[in-house]
Image (cartoon, rainbow over all chains, first blue to last red; front, side):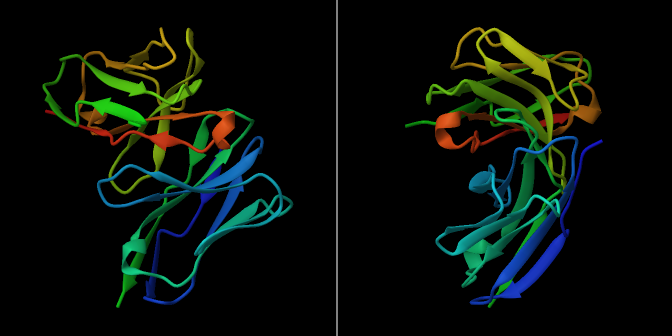
Length: 110
Length: 113
């Protein structure tokens, strides 16, 4: 079977930096994606890593190590609006459907 | 630019009833997907399509059917609704041109009683 593991909850204060880890065991691997979902809303695409290394998009960065079957999402200068659930997702091949983790709930306090 | 549009947003069904969840995208994406999300859980793939006329099962297809007659539309049919199908249903689309990032619809919240 396919499995993605990420922490269920993370808490942090405004202005801090938080890292959400994701480890995966899958029958194949093409890339790792991250999605944000606010309560009651639709998931929105944050980032994608197909190759090892760091991808930076504003306050958010994502990292992938294919040899370790591991990635993380790094959120800097946290704001209250970053309180949401964050999902890692693996694609087994190009264009195949994503397999999602169970999500990490991030709570940002002032 | 509407993106992915799902209707209805909310629906209550009685056990044994049937319904179709509609999904339309205007981005000319070839790939479309249906996921369900139970409370506090991740998204589970029901069905997906890589183009008009082509569909395939995902992780949890039982009790559902799909069709893809056009690039734009990907309806999900529930036959003989059961309480276990109470969930939030998300439709999404993607394509290579967008780096495979999914665009999701706003979801349909379904309750079966």
